[in-house]
Image 1 (tube, rainbow, N blue to C red):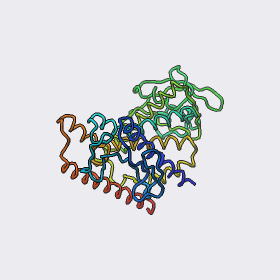
Image 2: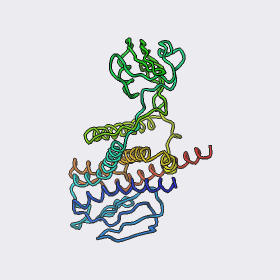
Image 3: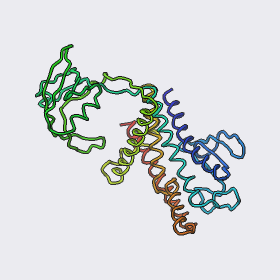
Image 4: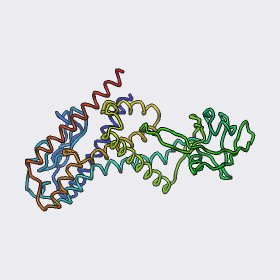
Length: 351
């Protein structure tokens, strides 16, 4: 069941991306010949209006084929009134960017839905205390609850970090232990910790970790929910951009690169954790699709934007021969990355 949910989620993300291209193309009067989820042989096709809507055999992506535009053959052009080729560079850029924009919009909507359902938020309950840390020296114990820091009420774990990261100052803590209030003084220490990329960073820490089963589902109103959705979408985008930078620079080993199999497997596992976890993960993958498609690689949306910017600046389209060679290079890069991701996924499954 989890695998089926994962395939539905992945297909939905592809559909939403391609729907962005489709709507932008139709807005500018471009005839869309085919709207396909998947590549290769079509297993199911239905004509709606002037467009063939298809499900294809290989569920590794999708495409919108517009009149006069074909990634597999950039030399294929048409100059009819409803052709992609006769549109201005700005209109082509908008059509190209509409797909990634749809992914960011979908992520925002999913995060907003989570904010309405309820965001699992860790409470200020202490799960463990690091030995010889400032917290241990101050007398903090496992299962303590931090209720106040420097006179300000504390309820959630995130509020602790906001106070502690100010520096190595003395802080007055109110602790709830066995239904008794205890007052303690603690001075955070600048300590080394690793971030999500395995890099060593220095932060002011007390030496405590949250209690994993102590959390509260927090629902937001319209304004706060929109703010939450925006911040989460921005955070996810920056995280993926930084991941790509570190992957290219070699700071993240290439064996960490995952493929479609890994995404489907992880989605399947997350689906068993509840609707909120599934929505959060789906939003992250949607942002990932948006960011990756903006890369300036021919055959991706970012590559199309690159060609259209050249046309906008020089007032003439790029050479068909150069576009053809660069597109072949782009497909080679994408195919190599997909095969590497597939190889890494298989390696992880079989140890």
